[in-house]
Image (cartoon, rainbow, N blue to C red; front, side, top):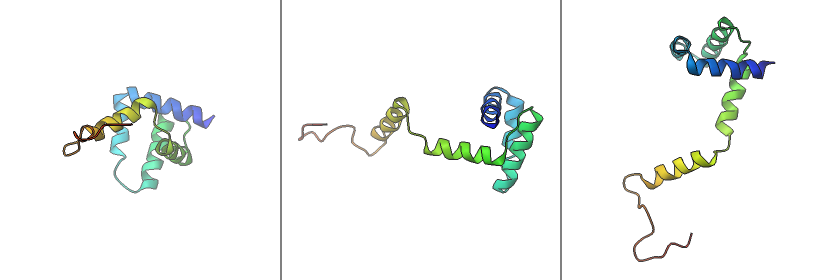
Length: 96
């Protein structure tokens, strides 16, 4: 099943530094060339991955909902940004 191969390929990519180096080398060029290169890299590693699989995975991760921990990190990052207040103005009570 393609989704299983895609997940397995990404799992291997997370731990295999040689594979990571090869994938980084593919970041130059047009999108279709990069996708074809990643598919070939996956095939060399024993996985069946199509450009459509990769595009679907990218679209799914971009549209995915943030979990609570990620949401806290985003909100925490906003609150700790230079120039932003880290709480309610001193003359007002926070009601939220």
